[in-house]
Image (cartoon, rainbow, N blue to C red; front, side):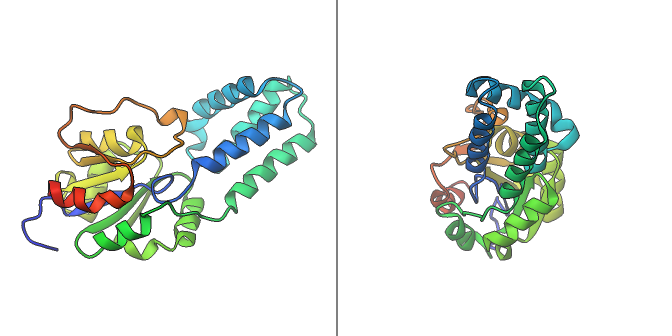
Length: 235
């Protein structure tokens, strides 16, 4: 690692930063609302599902298993407690399909990691279900690029401070890269790191916040292919 460089550690989000994720949730949501189409309109069911997910985050956390349980809860609510066993079984099958879906890496992901690897400590920082995130990392073929992997229940400034101290030289000399302003960028900035937003076409409604435009350590790039020149520019 070159001496004197101000950034020594790079954190990457996983879902919708390195590989597709939200797309599969949206497809499943559409199938779910179609399954219950006799009971309510798509928009109404989708809104009930989102509210169930919001309520259940503190119980189930992030990921497919919590999403599946929230679908079941919503089905029970929408049908006034009369959802048949066949509907519950179909929802469970949706969850299993999502958990077995092939991993699709996003453009420039492998190239960006390969170019940074060796010059910086590279850490995967992701939240969600432990088994599913480990599965996706293994299936992605990107695992060898990382010097550390952190699967956390929530991304907070304290988490970033701890992660970047454990795997690097502290938050002030780290950069976090991801598609979610709420989880990947804002708390990393509060921790004292750089925060780089790489937008994805689809972002979960519960991850939306306003961009921290006034923060001098905030940056935005259109895709991961622009990460290396950005890092060299700011470090």
